[in-house]
Image (cartoon, rainbow, N blue to C red; front, side, top):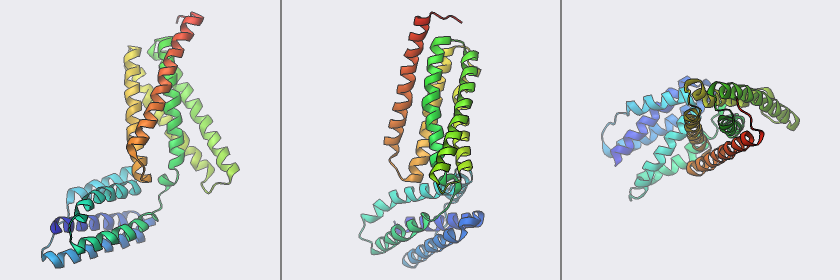
Length: 277
């Protein structure tokens, strides 16, 4: 167990060290955490009398995640996995474990909270854009599918509606931030909201450009919506340290509930107005 913990410490040392060279804005904080990890490693080494090599795959994995999903997400994911390992360490009577774990809980997590990353600062704007796009567009596409039943027209309607809604949402976010005197830059916040919205719109309408059968396209859109919810909820849950299962089920229930209601509204509208395209 000592050797396993020793390997974890040297692995984290390399992750923090490499990230400190990449992220200049947070280099001092990351370098300090790296030195703490090295101290833990040296303490364990004095006890085991053995050298431990880092897990190169883990180092590469977390550096890759940091590049594509952000440094905050990568580090919090790494710490989350480390917390699981620490549960087994706490069960032992090893005083050295208790000393190191206490140090990590009190010191390193405080330092991690100081890491500054733009995409995390504007995560609220991204959630706003993505949530609205999922709920509004999934419902709209479900209703249009039953009312029109022609994939090309549904796709065109969905894209036009979605982009118009994205611009409207961005404008509302800009005006809201500006009137509140928020610390966040209104224009940048609006851009994050709009970009998240438009990407979601394109992802949800894509099946209607591929499949001829409108109901197959709708089924794929629902799958895409659930995938987007899963990925983004996991990201937010890790970064914000929230309950993933609760957030995922809540967001899925709302989006799918609106889609189901809109589907039946499309049926009623088609029968009531007796419109055939």
